[in-house]
Length: 341
Image 1: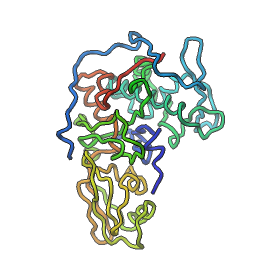
Image 2: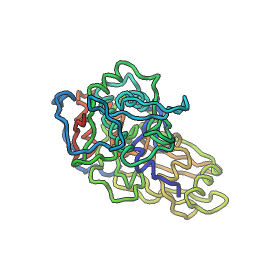
Image 3: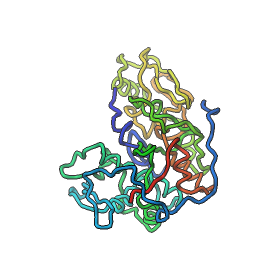
Image 4: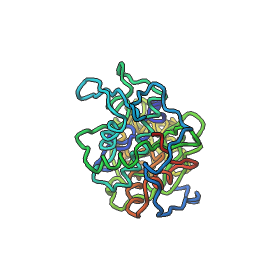
């Protein structure tokens, strides 16, 4: 089986340009009886109005500036060097990498809160593969990063959420996100093959996606050669030299395939998706899988693992007038937005 440790752990969502978790800024079921949170149009407090929360301890290895804000040593992959920069400055490049810089401001702010949570979770629990760096711009290690995409809108989203993170009863959660849920989000075990106990803050909820989402993200059809499918299947435990049969196996609560049956072998759907190419097989929310001679055609919905915040859902909620705090907490349960600096 392919290792999903980073995807299911600290690659919190990575939802716009990375194979395996979805990283394409241009694209950017069952469970229908799950209780749906209500949303109000009330404004949440601005970052400056929100009191500093002391329940979450900042990672000890972070360097702190005189004004109490953390800085990072970031390995900038394109320049092959490490650079010390304020965490908020680094976050601007991350936000521009993870979401298009002309999206609604409240959607950008929601993404900034999750991205900031990711950075702190990474520094708290992981060690960068680059010596002497706290984190990097390497998409295979952390989040997307695009300093060239930073504009005034990005800066505003970061500044207006300065210091804000998601808190799960005083701890940093995995702030998972994806591009499009296909209509319904998923829990971590279903969408990410998360191996530990299901986190208490994940939930299945209506995706609330904007109608402006590309049609080939909301619903898609893709064809693979039988040879491609068998090469991917071999990586996740299927046996056989030639593809003889393929069908959807078990499904999770949100309707996503958790297994596929290939030549009679049950293989994990999320790992298979990564092996096959997650920008082609856009999700495991499959409606149909057919073997026709030497080709396999798949029909599905959504783009990404489906866990946590849907980026196109954030767009849709922002269109409805919802604020960032309401948007980000809609996709998780038992969480709140708190300010750490």
